Image (cartoon, rainbow, N blue to C red; front, side):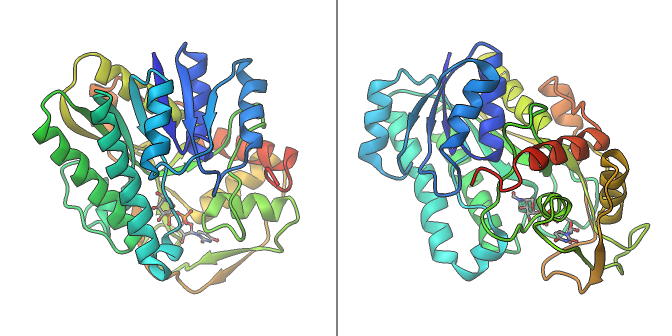
Length: 337
Ligand code: WQD
């Protein structure tokens, strides 16, 4: 089965590509490489021994996407392509709405022209906004606190409406919690542009000597140690969630289904720092800072629906996530640059 990965050269896309190739799928990647390195393609081949067709295009470019579909017999799509920096989305909302919605709308139009009816969408726990209750279940209220989150929620709605209009369309929306870690080879991993927004890449850059110390954004939350609690999930577990979603679609799913991809276990910022230090035998200097605007105390998933309906469970624990994150950064001090 040939699967198109839009944004497939990115952090989660590349890990999903490896798992697809290792499970007998053929993969085509469409990526403009704005937020990804072309080195990833060689790294994927080193890991799997397999090649992928790569189209360096903007997914919102309809003619370019048409050409891809006309040249490749695409049977399903996993749609990762999109800007994803929360803070940047607040500063540049129009850019985020234009890019993150145009890619999806163009993709749906071209899929329709080529009679492609299967799509998995990379959504995010950010669509739950400020949770009133945790752990979060798929049917709980959604609302966003930043344009990035709204683009995810609007894309969920666009895809849902498309399945109402076309009863043959099969859509799975995957709401990611906090992906961290890297493939055990250390050949692919998270390589943010500039100063990392997210916790784990910041920690690994402190560990490798690129940053002086970690700023812990607040220790006065209503949590066991006062620091923010999140549901961290190994990126390889997340990748395998996409394979299970494809199987679910191939088994006859029609319409739209939403799944949380998380572990169900929350860890605080200081839990992460202590575990990272323990498993890697490294000190991580940190300083308590003010809270970051928009942050909430606790965000954790109830993954029961995915466990049961996708027959998927996260297997890696926090030690693995911390060990594999460091293995990637240690072997690639400047990421892919
Ligand atoms: C985790 C915890 C911070 C950095 C974001 C996006 C979300 C999704 C995942 C795309 C929080 C604390 C962080 C630092 C810190 N991305 N922290 N110092 O905010 O849960 O979610 O990434 O879908 O949409 O919102 O992840 O890694 O930024 O923060 O103390 O330098 O670490 O306060 O408690 P977050 P994060």
